[in-house]
Image: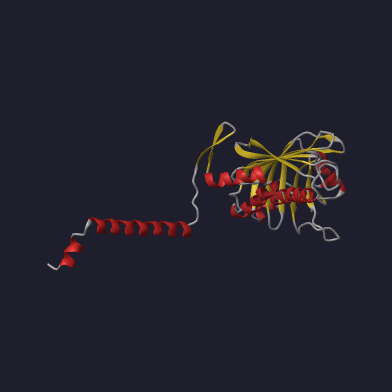
Length: 300
């Protein structure tokens, strides 16, 4: 048998080591190529927060979000805007609890069942606790236009007697004087996108002026969902600033605010908005934003 053939059949120790090394190098190259070509997968697990433990769907994403919560509130909120796209949040339902100080008086907390759709912008709200003068409103952009072409909302009075007098409901402008007597924000400003963008606008304006003091103050919980607690303080009253102290509780997974609390320059609560039972899995249709679907009668 030729000598070279015997070497191939019975390689030396040096040859064995060389072949093993080449094999390991090839396997390493394959693994690196796969890690580059394959997106990072979710790694569910348990993380420690403030001495407690929570289960997260992706530990890597949680840690990145926590770093932003500690270092850059605006970047975290912008990540939340991006996440709304991946969540498929074109429509959703939620329970909305709000408390507002209007003309110096802090009202009772109102609990509202909400249906929301982004396009066309549609909001249906039904009060289940502490309704003001109306207990249901329905707004669909482009519907119920007035003489000037402005979209109006359909309003169902809380009083049964008044409903009977007006034929079940009335039309009102969302930001008209009647509507704004009972709220700080019209229904046309509802939605996570609007809330996040409003927060970002004030953050960026105050930063530009060098007037924003921002802190990460640990964790809180809203409706069983863990949240980062962001606190922003502004030094002086200004028409562009809605509150002296703003607390924003940002969901650690969705990275969207589930509660926003504002205190004025007298140290009084000015507003408190909270979102629970959020369901991004619903696909709301035109039929969900009709008077009949929201128990509203319309006079002929």
